[in-house]
Amino acid sequence: MNSDAEPVLPDPSPGRTPAPTRRAVLGAAAVAFTTAACSTPDHPGGQSGSGGSSSSASSPSTSGAATTTATGSPTATAGGGLVKPGIASRPGDDIVHGPRDRSEVALTFHGQGPASLTTQVLEACRAADAHITVFAVGTWVTAAPELARAVLAAGHEVGNHTWSHQQMKTLDAATADAEVAKGVSALEKAVGTAGWWFRPSGTLHSTARIRAAARRAGYARCVSYDVDPQDFLDPGAVAVRQRTRTQVRAGSIVSLHLGHAGTAEALPGILTDLSRMGLRPVGLSTLLRDVA
Image 1 (cartoon, rainbow, N blue to C red):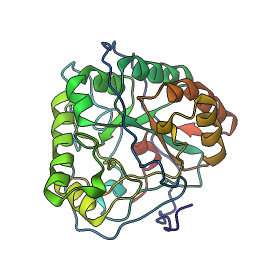
Image 2: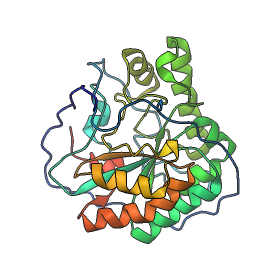
Image 3: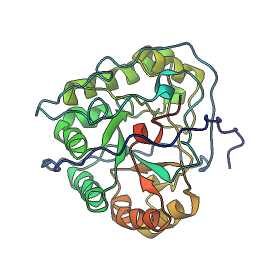
Image 4: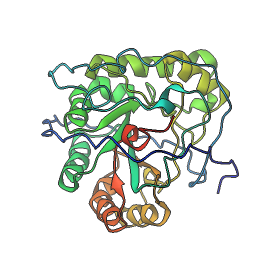
C-alpha cells in the first residue's frame, strides 16, 4: 500500500442531483488502437493522495455552460443537469475518492482503444443503468471523435487524460504543459468541451510540475483513484472482477481501461457485484456533486 495519506473530503449533504438520463448509444466505426499502461507495472494499487496546495485556476472554457457536440447532443459535463462540483474549482491534493457516507462509486476509464471494446463497455453500462467517466487520450479522440461522442450521447462524462499518454513524471515543464493543453484542444474540437476533470498519464500521483501544467490548462485538481485492479496488465476478466470487488467501497474511484478485452468482459460482473453490495455507479461529477 502507498504510504501517502488520502486527502480528507468534507462531509457532504444528502445527494441532490440524480444521474442523467441515458441516451441511445451512437454507432461507432471500428478503429483499432493499442492501449499503453496508465501506470508503471510496479506501482502499488489502493489508497493514495499526494500533492500540495496550488494557486487558483479557471475552468476549461467550455465546461461552465451547456454546449453541444457536432451532432447536436448536449455534452454530459456541461449539460444533462450536472453542476460543476466545488472541488473541481478548488486547488489542492489529488482527488482520490468521494464521500464515504453514501452508496455511490465512480467507475473511471482511461480512454483509448478499439471501437469494439468501447461499444462493449457502453452496452454493459446501458444494460445496468450505470454511468461512468472516461478520461480520454487526445490522440484517440482525434482519430475517432465518434467514440467520444458515443460516450457523451450515452449519458456518461469525459475528462482529459493528456494528448499522447506519456509518462508525465518524466516530462519537463514545457512538454507537460503541451500534453495537457493539447488534450484540452482535442476534446473541445471533438465534443465541444474538455470536461472538468484531468488525470495525468503514467502515474498514480501527480507532482508539483504536473499540477502546475493542469492549472495552466484550466484544471484546479488532478484525479487519482483508490481502487486499482491493474487491468492494464491483462490479468484476465476473473481477476479484474475479483480485485475490484475486494477493494471497492462507498465513495471509491475505480481505475479501469477501455482498451483491454479482459476489462470489457469483466464489466458486467463488476456491475452485478456493485448492485449486490448496494453501490450505485455514477459519473465523477455526480459522486463529487456537493463536495466543496
